[in-house]
Image 1 (spheres, rainbow, N blue to C red):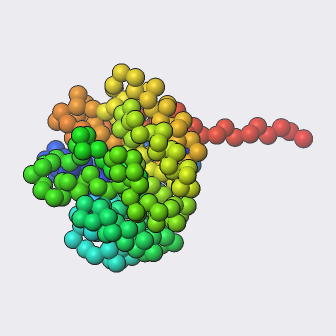
Image 2: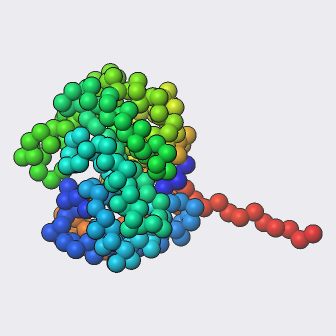
Image 3: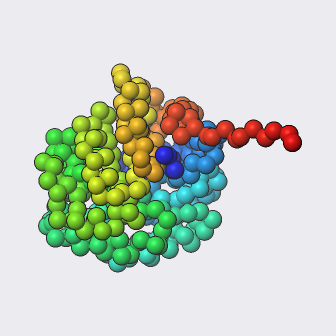
Length: 306
Protein backbone atom coordinates (compact mmCIF):
# COMPACT_ATOMS: atom_id res chain seq x y z
CA UNK A 1 0.00 0.00 0.00
CA UNK A 2 2.96 2.37 0.50
CA UNK A 3 4.39 3.33 -2.87
CA UNK A 4 6.40 6.34 -1.73
CA UNK A 5 8.13 7.60 1.39
CA UNK A 6 8.74 11.35 1.58
CA UNK A 7 11.64 12.53 3.72
CA UNK A 8 10.23 15.55 5.54
CA UNK A 9 7.68 18.14 4.40
CA UNK A 10 8.74 21.45 2.84
CA UNK A 11 12.30 21.43 4.21
CA UNK A 12 13.14 24.67 2.37
CA UNK A 13 10.27 26.49 4.11
CA UNK A 14 10.95 27.95 7.54
CA UNK A 15 7.48 26.90 8.68
CA UNK A 16 8.65 23.28 8.59
CA UNK A 17 12.46 23.37 8.93
CA UNK A 18 14.16 25.88 11.19
CA UNK A 19 16.78 27.81 9.15
CA UNK A 20 18.45 29.16 12.29
CA UNK A 21 19.38 25.60 13.30
CA UNK A 22 20.41 24.47 9.81
CA UNK A 23 21.01 27.55 7.63
CA UNK A 24 22.78 25.73 4.78
CA UNK A 25 20.63 22.55 4.88
CA UNK A 26 23.67 20.41 5.56
CA UNK A 27 21.92 18.64 8.46
CA UNK A 28 18.85 18.10 6.29
CA UNK A 29 20.98 16.64 3.48
CA UNK A 30 22.62 14.27 5.95
CA UNK A 31 19.15 13.35 7.24
CA UNK A 32 18.03 12.54 3.69
CA UNK A 33 21.07 10.36 3.01
CA UNK A 34 20.55 8.40 6.22
CA UNK A 35 16.78 8.07 5.81
CA UNK A 36 17.07 7.16 2.14
CA UNK A 37 19.48 4.35 2.94
CA UNK A 38 17.23 3.09 5.74
CA UNK A 39 14.08 3.12 3.58
CA UNK A 40 15.84 1.30 0.78
CA UNK A 41 17.15 -1.29 3.20
CA UNK A 42 13.64 -1.89 4.55
CA UNK A 43 12.03 -2.14 1.11
CA UNK A 44 13.86 -1.21 -2.10
CA UNK A 45 10.55 -1.07 -4.00
CA UNK A 46 9.30 1.96 -2.06
CA UNK A 47 10.15 5.16 -3.93
CA UNK A 48 12.14 7.59 -1.80
CA UNK A 49 10.88 11.14 -2.21
CA UNK A 50 12.85 14.30 -1.43
CA UNK A 51 10.70 16.40 0.90
CA UNK A 52 8.28 18.43 -1.22
CA UNK A 53 9.84 21.85 -1.68
CA UNK A 54 7.95 25.08 -1.17
CA UNK A 55 8.84 27.39 -2.82
CA UNK A 56 9.81 25.58 -6.01
CA UNK A 57 13.51 26.34 -6.18
CA UNK A 58 15.97 24.77 -8.65
CA UNK A 59 18.91 26.31 -6.79
CA UNK A 60 17.88 24.46 -3.63
CA UNK A 61 17.72 21.21 -5.64
CA UNK A 62 21.23 21.86 -6.92
CA UNK A 63 22.33 22.39 -3.32
CA UNK A 64 20.82 19.01 -2.42
CA UNK A 65 22.73 17.38 -5.28
CA UNK A 66 26.02 18.97 -4.19
CA UNK A 67 25.57 17.50 -0.70
CA UNK A 68 24.66 14.02 -1.94
CA UNK A 69 20.98 14.07 -1.00
CA UNK A 70 19.73 13.42 -4.54
CA UNK A 71 21.71 10.19 -4.64
CA UNK A 72 19.52 8.91 -1.79
CA UNK A 73 16.13 9.54 -3.44
CA UNK A 74 14.20 8.45 -6.52
CA UNK A 75 11.76 11.36 -6.74
CA UNK A 76 11.99 15.14 -6.34
CA UNK A 77 8.71 16.66 -5.15
CA UNK A 78 7.27 20.15 -5.53
CA UNK A 79 4.45 22.03 -3.80
CA UNK A 80 2.61 24.93 -5.39
CA UNK A 81 -0.22 27.27 -4.44
CA UNK A 82 -0.21 29.97 -7.14
CA UNK A 83 -3.56 31.55 -6.22
CA UNK A 84 -2.88 31.66 -2.49
CA UNK A 85 0.79 31.94 -1.45
CA UNK A 86 3.07 31.82 -4.50
CA UNK A 87 4.08 34.84 -6.56
CA UNK A 88 3.51 33.18 -9.92
CA UNK A 89 0.34 32.59 -12.00
CA UNK A 90 -1.41 29.24 -12.17
CA UNK A 91 -0.66 28.83 -15.89
CA UNK A 92 3.08 28.74 -15.01
CA UNK A 93 2.78 25.22 -13.57
CA UNK A 94 4.41 23.50 -16.59
CA UNK A 95 7.30 25.99 -16.46
CA UNK A 96 7.81 25.31 -12.76
CA UNK A 97 7.96 21.57 -13.41
CA UNK A 98 10.44 22.15 -16.26
CA UNK A 99 12.72 24.18 -13.96
CA UNK A 100 13.14 21.18 -11.67
CA UNK A 101 13.42 18.68 -14.53
CA UNK A 102 16.34 20.74 -15.83
CA UNK A 103 18.35 20.31 -12.62
CA UNK A 104 17.17 16.78 -11.78
CA UNK A 105 16.81 15.05 -15.16
CA UNK A 106 17.60 11.68 -13.60
CA UNK A 107 14.67 11.81 -11.15
CA UNK A 108 10.90 11.60 -11.36
CA UNK A 109 9.20 14.89 -10.54
CA UNK A 110 5.99 14.67 -8.49
CA UNK A 111 3.61 17.47 -7.54
CA UNK A 112 2.89 16.29 -4.02
CA UNK A 113 0.87 19.33 -2.91
CA UNK A 114 -1.16 21.45 -5.29
CA UNK A 115 -4.10 23.51 -4.20
CA UNK A 116 -6.32 26.54 -4.38
CA UNK A 117 -8.32 27.69 -1.39
CA UNK A 118 -11.81 29.09 -1.10
CA UNK A 119 -10.77 31.93 1.25
CA UNK A 120 -11.57 34.61 -1.34
CA UNK A 121 -14.43 32.86 -3.12
CA UNK A 122 -15.51 29.28 -3.66
CA UNK A 123 -15.71 29.97 -7.40
CA UNK A 124 -11.97 30.58 -7.39
CA UNK A 125 -11.39 27.11 -5.99
CA UNK A 126 -13.63 25.57 -8.68
CA UNK A 127 -11.47 27.24 -11.33
CA UNK A 128 -8.31 26.13 -9.50
CA UNK A 129 -9.26 22.44 -9.44
CA UNK A 130 -10.14 22.40 -13.12
CA UNK A 131 -7.17 24.41 -14.34
CA UNK A 132 -4.63 22.55 -12.20
CA UNK A 133 -5.84 19.23 -13.60
CA UNK A 134 -5.63 20.57 -17.15
CA UNK A 135 -2.05 21.69 -16.61
CA UNK A 136 -0.64 18.77 -14.63
CA UNK A 137 -2.53 15.54 -15.41
CA UNK A 138 -0.27 13.67 -17.80
CA UNK A 139 2.58 16.09 -17.16
CA UNK A 140 3.88 14.43 -13.98
CA UNK A 141 3.43 10.86 -12.66
CA UNK A 142 1.80 11.87 -9.35
CA UNK A 143 -0.34 14.85 -8.33
CA UNK A 144 -1.88 15.31 -4.89
CA UNK A 145 -4.55 17.95 -4.33
CA UNK A 146 -4.36 19.66 -0.95
CA UNK A 147 -6.74 18.88 0.61
CA UNK A 148 -9.93 16.88 1.18
CA UNK A 149 -11.02 18.64 4.39
CA UNK A 150 -10.76 22.21 5.57
CA UNK A 151 -8.49 22.54 8.57
CA UNK A 152 -10.67 23.12 11.66
CA UNK A 153 -10.29 26.66 12.96
CA UNK A 154 -9.68 25.40 16.49
CA UNK A 155 -6.68 23.27 15.52
CA UNK A 156 -4.30 25.94 14.26
CA UNK A 157 -2.09 25.72 11.19
CA UNK A 158 1.47 24.36 11.25
CA UNK A 159 3.27 27.62 10.58
CA UNK A 160 5.70 29.62 12.67
CA UNK A 161 4.13 33.09 12.82
CA UNK A 162 0.40 32.37 12.77
CA UNK A 163 -1.89 35.43 12.93
CA UNK A 164 1.02 37.79 12.28
CA UNK A 165 0.94 36.53 8.68
CA UNK A 166 -2.45 38.16 8.12
CA UNK A 167 -4.64 36.66 5.41
CA UNK A 168 -1.82 34.28 4.45
CA UNK A 169 -2.38 32.51 7.76
CA UNK A 170 -6.16 32.32 7.47
CA UNK A 171 -5.98 30.82 3.99
CA UNK A 172 -4.70 27.64 5.65
CA UNK A 173 -8.24 26.94 6.89
CA UNK A 174 -9.93 27.04 3.46
CA UNK A 175 -7.88 24.63 1.31
CA UNK A 176 -10.27 21.66 1.54
CA UNK A 177 -12.96 20.43 -0.82
CA UNK A 178 -15.20 19.81 2.20
CA UNK A 179 -16.01 22.41 4.84
CA UNK A 180 -15.31 21.98 8.54
CA UNK A 181 -18.99 21.16 9.12
CA UNK A 182 -18.77 18.23 6.67
CA UNK A 183 -20.67 19.82 3.78
CA UNK A 184 -19.11 19.69 0.31
CA UNK A 185 -17.97 22.80 -1.50
CA UNK A 186 -18.81 23.30 -5.21
CA UNK A 187 -15.22 22.31 -6.04
CA UNK A 188 -15.78 18.73 -4.84
CA UNK A 189 -17.99 17.93 -7.84
CA UNK A 190 -15.29 19.19 -10.19
CA UNK A 191 -12.55 17.32 -8.38
CA UNK A 192 -14.57 14.10 -8.69
CA UNK A 193 -14.13 14.25 -12.47
CA UNK A 194 -10.35 13.83 -12.11
CA UNK A 195 -10.09 11.97 -8.77
CA UNK A 196 -8.72 8.83 -10.42
CA UNK A 197 -5.87 10.86 -11.96
CA UNK A 198 -5.20 13.55 -9.35
CA UNK A 199 -4.79 12.11 -5.87
CA UNK A 200 -5.35 13.78 -2.51
CA UNK A 201 -2.98 15.05 0.15
CA UNK A 202 -4.69 14.84 3.55
CA UNK A 203 -2.94 15.11 6.90
CA UNK A 204 -4.59 12.93 9.51
CA UNK A 205 -3.61 14.32 12.90
CA UNK A 206 -2.97 12.09 15.91
CA UNK A 207 -6.24 10.22 16.65
CA UNK A 208 -7.96 12.32 13.98
CA UNK A 209 -11.76 11.94 14.24
CA UNK A 210 -12.05 12.58 10.47
CA UNK A 211 -10.24 9.40 9.41
CA UNK A 212 -13.26 7.19 8.73
CA UNK A 213 -15.16 9.99 6.98
CA UNK A 214 -12.08 10.69 4.91
CA UNK A 215 -11.84 7.09 3.75
CA UNK A 216 -15.55 7.04 2.92
CA UNK A 217 -15.30 10.21 0.87
CA UNK A 218 -12.18 9.05 -0.98
CA UNK A 219 -13.76 5.76 -1.95
CA UNK A 220 -16.92 7.51 -3.06
CA UNK A 221 -14.87 9.90 -5.21
CA UNK A 222 -12.76 7.12 -6.73
CA UNK A 223 -9.45 8.35 -5.35
CA UNK A 224 -6.57 5.97 -5.99
CA UNK A 225 -3.53 7.83 -4.68
CA UNK A 226 -3.20 9.44 -1.25
CA UNK A 227 -0.42 11.32 0.44
CA UNK A 228 -0.48 11.58 4.24
CA UNK A 229 1.97 11.61 7.13
CA UNK A 230 3.38 9.65 10.04
CA UNK A 231 4.96 11.90 12.65
CA UNK A 232 8.23 10.99 14.34
CA UNK A 233 7.19 13.28 17.19
CA UNK A 234 3.84 11.47 17.56
CA UNK A 235 5.63 8.13 17.85
CA UNK A 236 6.54 9.07 21.43
CA UNK A 237 2.92 9.68 22.49
CA UNK A 238 1.09 7.08 24.56
CA UNK A 239 -0.93 4.89 22.20
CA UNK A 240 1.05 5.99 19.13
CA UNK A 241 1.41 2.54 17.59
CA UNK A 242 -2.28 1.77 18.06
CA UNK A 243 -3.09 4.99 16.19
CA UNK A 244 -0.53 4.38 13.45
CA UNK A 245 -1.89 0.85 12.96
CA UNK A 246 -5.47 2.10 12.78
CA UNK A 247 -4.59 4.85 10.35
CA UNK A 248 -2.62 2.65 7.99
CA UNK A 249 -5.20 -0.15 8.10
CA UNK A 250 -7.94 2.34 7.21
CA UNK A 251 -5.88 3.54 4.22
CA UNK A 252 -4.95 0.08 2.97
CA UNK A 253 -7.09 0.31 -0.18
CA UNK A 254 -5.12 3.29 -1.52
CA UNK A 255 -1.64 3.71 -2.99
CA UNK A 256 -0.08 5.80 -0.24
CA UNK A 257 2.84 8.18 -0.21
CA UNK A 258 3.66 8.60 3.46
CA UNK A 259 5.53 11.65 4.71
CA UNK A 260 7.92 11.15 7.62
CA UNK A 261 8.54 14.38 9.51
CA UNK A 262 8.39 16.43 12.75
CA UNK A 263 11.16 16.16 15.31
CA UNK A 264 10.30 15.15 18.90
CA UNK A 265 11.05 18.15 21.10
CA UNK A 266 13.40 16.18 23.34
CA UNK A 267 15.50 15.08 20.35
CA UNK A 268 15.83 18.39 18.51
CA UNK A 269 18.72 20.83 18.46
CA UNK A 270 15.97 23.17 19.63
CA UNK A 271 12.85 21.84 21.41
CA UNK A 272 10.54 22.27 18.43
CA UNK A 273 9.09 19.99 15.76
CA UNK A 274 10.73 22.07 12.97
CA UNK A 275 14.20 21.69 14.44
CA UNK A 276 16.83 19.44 12.96
CA UNK A 277 17.53 16.44 15.17
CA UNK A 278 20.65 16.31 17.28
CA UNK A 279 21.16 12.77 15.95
CA UNK A 280 19.68 12.41 12.43
CA UNK A 281 20.19 8.65 12.59
CA UNK A 282 17.26 8.50 15.00
CA UNK A 283 14.96 9.83 12.29
CA UNK A 284 16.38 7.32 9.80
CA UNK A 285 15.63 4.51 12.24
CA UNK A 286 12.04 5.76 12.59
CA UNK A 287 11.63 5.69 8.80
CA UNK A 288 13.01 2.15 8.59
CA UNK A 289 10.74 1.00 11.42
CA UNK A 290 7.64 2.41 9.72
CA UNK A 291 8.47 0.85 6.35
CA UNK A 292 9.19 -2.51 7.93
CA UNK A 293 5.88 -2.33 9.78
CA UNK A 294 3.61 -1.08 6.98
CA UNK A 295 5.41 -1.92 3.73
CA UNK A 296 7.72 -4.86 4.41
CA UNK A 297 9.73 -6.16 1.48
CA UNK A 298 8.26 -9.28 -0.02
CA UNK A 299 10.41 -12.37 0.45
CA UNK A 300 11.63 -13.89 -2.79
CA UNK A 301 10.05 -17.27 -3.58
CA UNK A 302 12.27 -20.25 -3.00
CA UNK A 303 13.59 -21.93 -6.14
CA UNK A 304 13.57 -25.72 -5.96
CA UNK A 305 15.99 -27.78 -7.97
CA UNK A 306 14.56 -29.75 -10.86
